[in-house]
Image (cartoon, rainbow, N blue to C red):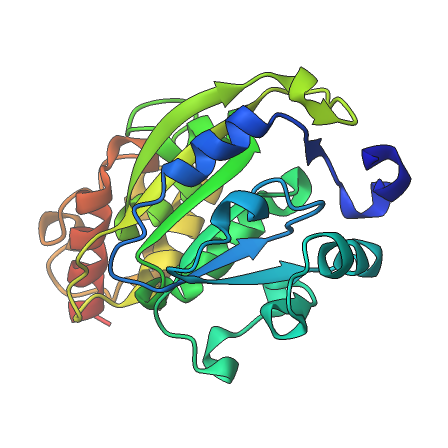
Length: 259
């Protein structure tokens, strides 16, 4: 059946293995929220195991043909399916303020999906998703690793992350050229005084110029005083990959004091 719905333009890879689908859904806690938002439900292999009397499921799907399938064969009510692009979706428009996110994410936009989740992190206590294995490793990477970068720091600032398991490429249609992996995100308690926008800017600039020490890459963010600022602000003589998530948060707070 998958081959009749496959559209290359949407970067679709349909999961076929029901046991893996069950395993993914079971990783959700279903605690402290009553709605689960599934991104790109496709033919509903995850959706089937999400449908229970105990919580509401909201599906966001960009492909009209798949929406027709979900309505007809899974009998999903019209008001539980949003036809649209998750990257443009604003939960505040429907007054949705506490929900989990799940999905077999399209590989070509999986990083963008994460950044959109971070935009609304205060509403999303947990998330579980299928990613390209390389991206999944980047997300959970600790400082000092070659894969440690923008995605690692920003996701780990707001969520505790866990690499759950690797998924063989042969359980998808069509078979992708890469391995896949499932990761789990659980929201941290974030202090309200964190300047989220400044943190994002500093992290992105620091890693986009990762060969430079931070004193040089972040010079535009720092107000110069009579005392050289590298003696006042910690970490400026290090490179981006040498800083932990906590270090970046502290660095952002120190920079904000001097702006």
